[in-house]
Image 1 (cartoon, rainbow, N blue to C red):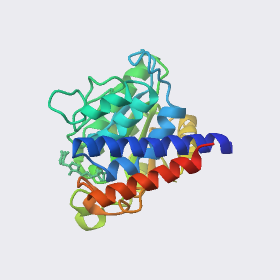
Image 2 (image 1 turned 135 degrees about the horizontal axis):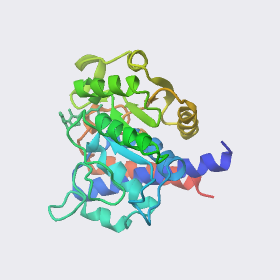
Image 3 (image 1 turned 120 degrees about the vertical axis):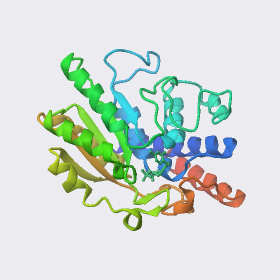
Image 4 (image 1 turned 180 degrees about the vertical axis):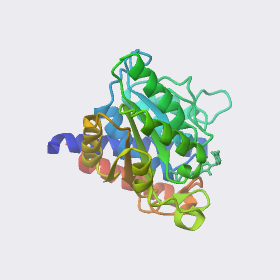
Amino acid sequence: MLAEEKRKLELEAARIRKTALETIHTAGSGHIGGSFSMADIMAVLYFKAMNIDPKDPDKADRDRLVLSKGHCSPVMYATLARRGFFPVEHLKTFRRIDSDLSGHVEIHVPGVDMSGGSLGQGLSVALGMAMFAKANKTGNYVYAIMGDGEIQEGQIWEAAMAAGFYKVNNLIGFVDNNKIQLDGRLTEVMDPNPIDEKFRAFGWNVLSINGQDVEEVADAIEEAKKCLDKPNMIIAHTTKGAGVSVFEDTPRFHGGQPKPEEYEQAIKELDDRIASLEV
Ligand SMILES: Cc1ncc(C[n+]2csc(CCOP(=O)(O)OP(=O)(O)O)c2C)c(N)n1
């Protein structure tokens, strides 16, 4: 990847984080940790990899994305708004009773292909979409983003078994492996490791990357697209709350809110990061 493209993607990721945080702050609630850990993945998907058109969100041959960890709606909505699917201003209505932007992603929002919230279901839905695309030769890819705590759900492994058996190679999954779930650290709650070997055993092409590195994310997607006989799972090693020092690797920021001084510091860090990336 050229340095210039990398800089632009890093800038998008930083802007997505700031927009997501402001959205959560205005609402007074929302999930910071899991939104921030996957912000770099979202920047690569929406500003480089995916075949999408914000002016025609329902175009038939578009790539689909299922945000199975649907509680991370702030990062999804911030990304869609920044990419032009709807005005950034609209994010101010996030989590209001009369808004379409509810706390978990909803299908009626432009750019959203599947509602989320009940963990464990997204991989099955994405598999169905990918099988449809193959059967109808539409040529599109289907992405699914799961949490590492989420893969404790049994339905994930039913979908994994089917995808491997049917060699659904246009399916590209991500596990946002940020090592913290709602109740604390994954290894203390119910350790799903080794995640890579489990998916491999179910017939998947598995790639393990640093999910905070936009270049590694982009390369992994390209690599996945070359695989013609297996579904693809990208295990993205990430840090919960990545991008802001006070949020990083801190279980309380799964769904908890920063104190005013923490919020100010977070905005300052993100502004500094954005300024360092702007030319
Ligand atoms: C079926 C189901 N059970 C419980 C919850 C409540 N819940 C919301 S987020 C979460 C933790 C998810 O952890 P992880 O998948 O690691 O997400 P991340 O750390 O990336 O936010 C839980 C248990 C839910 N949304 N759905």
